[in-house]
Image (cartoon, rainbow, N blue to C red; front, side):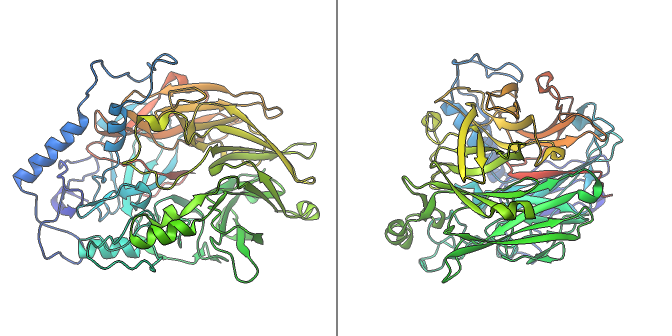
Length: 599
């Protein structure tokens, strides 16, 4: 897009982004709509008044202010163990990141090449491909703030490395029904799963309306030339891979009709021994049981490297209603799903939700004393001879898993990051420094499963709280040694904090010995997003590659993509890409698509 075609485009958070021209040619101004009659395409040609712009700037400067009597800790200079814990300043900085992106709600077409000045260090020439990311992009919709970022509209962006040192960026919001209609109407219309009451703001509240907005904000997959935005509460959205424009909400993925018309936001990439064995493995499962059998229909789907359907395995999972299945694991012979000990709380539904006192998501609660369930689902004939298993675990809550593999003695190792408990009433307003003292911790945990006897034991391998694991996909379903997570700078059995570090975990696949760590601390005012592993082409060792991680700096108000040598992250990033003048809110999940370069 040339600067001569600059447009004034809608961004509903109420600020004006600085216009600028990037190498490759782009200049645009972002403005808040003020006109009562909006064009149907959502493009607005009015600019906020000087007073409004001044008020916005002063509010932002107040949020950026450093209120402590000492200077903040800097990157690579972590506080000594036991000397730091989250403060009110930490919470203020963290909350400040959950605001609307500065990116245009109408996308940026073919994208643009970042200015060379935005890149520091040297981007490896072998790092060739595209990083895809998805996450909530709008945390305020026409004056109505969301205090739970899970309800934010999905923003998908891609950062492409052609291999010549340049970086190309493009983005688009997922054109869901709710997003499209709200942008056209210039007001909030749809209720999110975490919204309380009537988002329209009028007196009418229908407590029997259990439909929630498909925000399509959790995952993204690029495979076989096609791209999909994922949210397990609804249908996937197909997007054009070249410009990330939404094609449609779909019930088919890569030509395969989904048994359950939704697809989980997580999947596994199985590399195998050759290109012919390479698979994308995904799943879908009903949130409520089919009547009258009381089983939840589920399916695992596998596609080859070209996007052709390789196999579909259907399962009936008993008594799994409201089990909140977010992620999966896979080995040579098995698929695994962790069922959370959650159920619908009828009292909360009738006494709070019906009277607009809580969100629909809050009525799904962990049940005291209820066991989590590990479902072992056969992938091969060898596993089918053992049969489908449901193994009880101690009460805990699962979002994300690391990897699983089979030992020669028949045991199966599953590495995961279980939370002590989960309360869906937690939101941006309720988090304070005391939240990080005990409470809902999450730790690197190893589960050893005997599928024949239906037994499982678990051991914590690292007491440093962390989330958003990644690893080398070439070792998915195989014995692995290394994993990487976002993590807290506090390493303690009780205290923890927000994710401000990149952590490398090195384990012994044959034992339950504690992990060995490498840690890179970004600084006291920095907060990290999900790390992504990109393998070096032709690599022969597991950690030969790079880690890519987007970091938000609350003090500098910057969003930066950092690149590390995965073998030794303690040396700090070897290259960094600044998204100049842009705010990329904390995202959820993404993927590295090796060799994928869309011109």
